Length: 373
Ligand code: FES
Image (cartoon, rainbow, N blue to C red):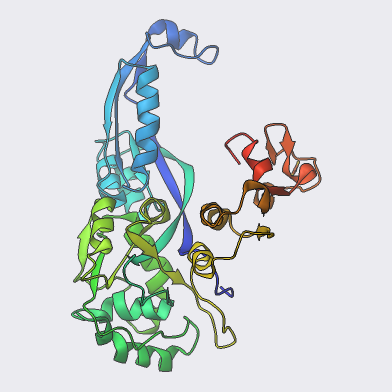
């Protein structure tokens, strides 16, 4: 990662739904005979669908379940989100029909399913990011490197109760690892370190270890895991409340999926996670906050944004807050393009082809497009 300006999302992870090949929902004989030739109606589909697993995927599945049962009121069931690992345990024990997951199934879980004779297919339903977060009132922390995250959250930080307790470990890591995992931002504040995050049952927990901690742990001959002494919760909303902290105690730290973090930006602040190096002397942090700080004047100006769609999504409202009109905001939809020459049909939004009609548009033009942009 070279750019020091980036959204707070650390890295991306796929969200998976595993579905057992046999559903307990059933159709009437007449519907079965017509399978493939007509949509099932509300009158002829019934049964029970039980879904469990990732709390990150749960909101998506719940919406789908609501829509499905509205269409088929004789279908019953439930959706819950105890965590990816717990979900797989239920699924491979034959207790659920669909298992939400925020990571791929582990070998030992797949073996358990195979031993139980449970076959499945994996379906990718979305892409989420991993966000390192602190309280919105913690203005001392804008950016942390992977080295910092290991010093504060890794297995060797057990019993560190203050951020500054990690100073010596960060110095040791910087000497041993050089800049391979980013520069140390120590000395850290001499303030109580309060950590909230997902528990071991969570796929987001596993992803954080894999993406943020595992390589440094291996270099240190340590187990690839987090420190054990933090507040672990299965409910993402409880994690958010823990990291939100209070105005008197804002020196919190935690991690959740980006989808959850982005819904709670009034409570938590996304920490930029970047390697950076000594050549970068500019701002380090997330773009929307930087735009707010710089506060460019809208008079006789245009704002041009390009970058990851998620950055653009959160930057546009900041520009509007500063008084930029839809005509004064120019952005790009190039991420929707594939072939780029009008041949593949992958970039159309309604009747507009991004590759032929753009990819640069004013926000006024974009707002006239169907919502999927
Ligand atoms: S990107 Fe292929 S048609 Fe536009």
